[in-house]
Image (tube, rainbow, N blue to C red):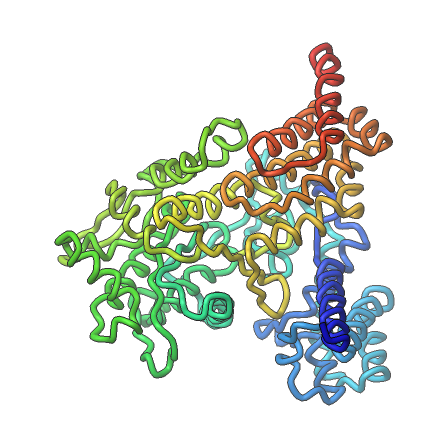
Length: 573
């Protein structure tokens, strides 16, 4: 090979490694469990404020601090800088100045930070002051904690002030804590802001698939959760509408009850067929929104457009012609649990090691979620009609599955619900479409929305959390519960092997080395929580037994010894 080509390839590899390290370094993670009644620690607060400052807040009259610095330094296109694959010196300079300004604000006050920005970057004081005032307000509210007082008031039957439920970075108005969380008006979903943000996410999702496959997905399966759409005012719903190529129309009361078709000339890509699986909580809270989504699919299916530009119409037509289906059946795309039921139980089956082959997990998902919610051609409501064949047919055409991550506090290895839903539907698609779909997650935890594959997300969360000393030492400070949380992360990581085979073998090897093969760490875990220690070792052995991981025999023998050694201690405790 040409020496110059070798050098170029080496430099490219080094740059990719550097970018991954920077991504992990900048990842915002919780460094311990929340302690009821205790305010945030200083370092955690600083990281939060840095992220809060990185978003435009038009409702607060505040612009992103990095954007203000970029404008003052004469950077022509900050948005283009955000979307560059590599981290440039200019980007590092802007981020550094913004981070220092946040620190100045916390330590010395707003006016000191305003003057500091003038001296370092020439940022106009009238531009920076609203942003820094917001940062100072959030900092003060993070120092306050009303949870114990509010609990006492609730026990006395007294009034608790209401507050919105969301992620602090997305909506600082959730502070102070200790308030009675309220939801949103379902008729207002999606909000105008959520719809605007969703365009960038949907475009990025389709662009990622197109770059990998050279075409757009014929159909995409989307997971929608109730709490996530409460926190984002319907961003997931808005993404579904954008993929279909429609926008919500509001009435005089600001209710989104109708849809408007976006012309193909404006859309400049095909309309994507979207199969929507919604959680039981979403079903209970957002019935008008489900009707809006169903209306959008039906409208798109009846448009007089070329089949290669309208995948909904193409798939519905194929279904009708293939088996003489009625239009109402062929166009069904919104599925959930039967009325009164919740969850898929895929997580329970995985955690209890109660499945024999992978197809069982996908079948269970469909069994639990195959109930249709729609209106027929005569406008009659269809709520919770079992429609397994219709869901099987819709999933058989799916080529990509997708879910949004909207909070830095809860990721795909923090709770089992992510692999329960996204993993469950991906496995259901794989067995029905006879091929594994591309599985994506969007990350809106930074100003530049990024689409990652499931494998990329598992690697990132493993490096940023499970194998990160900052994370696991923060957990170990909580003793028994902290060890249980570490074991929970490993179990949830295993869930992605079971449902999507998305965990690299090195992850299990490094988990073993970090927590079980290190004698000092092993003793710490044993003293704090021998029950979770044994469960962790058993889960790793299960990963090997099911073919997800094949370490050397020395590691396997050590895991068996740990289980045997601590079995007697746990049993006699």
